[in-house]
Image (cartoon, rainbow, N blue to C red; front, side):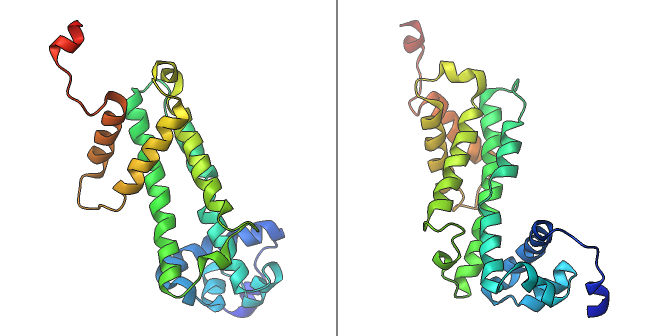
Length: 207
């Protein structure tokens, strides 16, 4: 497609245009990291290169918006909160954990691509307070996982938020080990969190 045809693309609001450019740029980051060019982004977004700079001041601003999109938990936490409330607690937490892992690992892969191509992620923090976006990411994920306990929360020995924090800790270690059946590995950790690591004996039940 020529530059002239791209310039005739349908008009969008600045916010929608920014979102479309970010959506187009994200897959390129996985492939090229920080070496991605604005020309490549423009081609993927099907716009003229000059259009990028009407909604973003420079390439770094585009990368910063991409990092912000990676750390946006809105869609994944909505999926977690939409899990069937009538499912068994272990099943619901397993599904929620898998949703978190898929989101976290996609973000991690793209962040890794940026770092390995020389980008300092501190320069791309979407907030003025360094690290605050990442803190908010885990806080929002923890809250969604806590809500996934549903009505069974009343039967827990600890607060749902504490259980969610423990589960996140387990999952953060799990994502580093790719040589295992992911769902069974998640379920096993959840089973230990819910039931404990010690084997129960008949006399325990009788007592």
